Length: 98
Image (cartoon, helix red, strand yellow):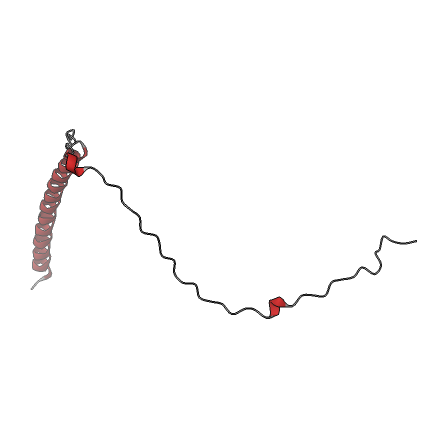
């Protein structure tokens, strides 16, 4: 095939693809418009009338079950912390000069 024929075929395919693209864009626009209308309708619903409560539907006090605490694991006593440092004695204070 010559290059001119190839170019013509490719241009035809390109034109067809562009037409398909425009159709799809139109469909998408219409679908978005419908969706916007539905969303707008949902945002402004009519006032709802509260349902009447039957006397049998009165709330009864609910007793709360005491929360169970997880048992704590016993930690071994630290032996190093039990030792006390010897008390420092104040032999001579720097301010006690005679």
